[in-house]
Image (cartoon, rainbow, N blue to C red):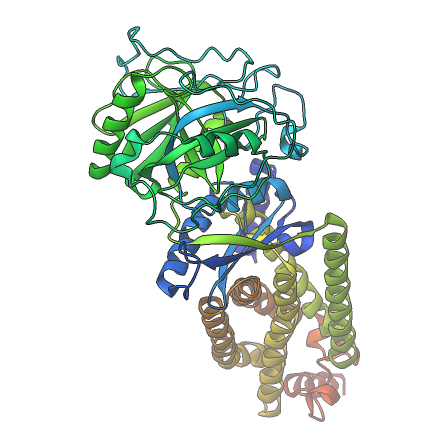
Length: 571
């Protein structure tokens, strides 16, 4: 029991050091967002390859983990759906990160115009101007809708040396192609143009994309295009795209580089630098394509010296190019904050999915509903605990104290472990986890029942109470270990085979089973040994639970002998 006290004191000390006194709660208890994604082939037809779906699930899971939240779940449902559940994340933020499920592409910019946003900016960007938007766009002043971004070779000494290409000044003016006539405002609804191809194969391949020039029909359609109009991102066709804030629209050429040619992306501050940048690294094929693209773009003027990074039809970044960049290593700079640089790097790193996805459903569990479920779970646990305590005192009488004390110690250790696991590895308690903790009440009580029944058997065999407590323990502990081993095996199998929140039940059940073994060995048995030495319990008081009638004998063997000897000495 001294070792038990030291261990409990150690757990409480760790909680105090980490200043963590409450466990993390899961999605169903504290609120969060669930997004259902439905997969489709990029060609728009045919079945979904299961291997591609699993690969997409892994990439989306990496995106979600980059948000830094506990108990995030990314699971495959059926033959074409992926369900993403993340607690304590705003709905707009999760949809913005996870909803970007199209193939990542790099396209040349041919025209750029400032426009009025057609929809309210997401809540994450509705705050004051200095607040960074979790979008991957560099944050600038509130009056600069077109932040200056540039891409340079990723070397400490590779700063532009004043070549012909200049960094855009971000002067709030619409950036139009100087080689194209400025589109006039239409005085009447434009005549619908011919439908554009929705599948690749009829346009310009990547190796000829730099030679592409927009037609008069492209310019007319671009003038009539407004942010929010549906667009199909076809790799070999031009694309009308808007920034994610909806304050700029771009006329983009066919794809120059596919996202799967980008091998890595990271955010950081370069050596001897003071501003955050996004580092890009392309593979061999992508390095050649990127060098050719940057050489051609650097010779042009703004905005045609820019390329757009397109994901899900949105331009998440459109940096300018000042010089040709060989080697496939580059840096995007331009007023980034740590948050915006990290978000852009995550989107680039995990953006190239093998499938396209549609957001089928977005549901949000409010904190109020989560609180009600937590309250219901606590009430259920208290009811179960009360029933167990009443039964123990009714059947075992005074020995009910042993059960209650064992449950209390198990509860303290379990609570401390959940708090520490939440702060260290991100374990989050959910509703099935509470169910597992409730089941643990029965597991702990069952261990005592096994022990008590063995004591009863030993007394019936003629052993004294103190001897029965010790010999009964030697036989009962094997049964207790086997029972807990079965429970632990069930928890392990369920944790491996189950998905989603059911794992919370399996994990909590396994944790509480281990704690039950610890408590019964280091607390229940030593406490029984101490109680057997007291007059109330060891003497077989009728309310102790160890009286002869309750043990199924006429008299306690050792007590009867001592009483007879005492009576004979008085005579």
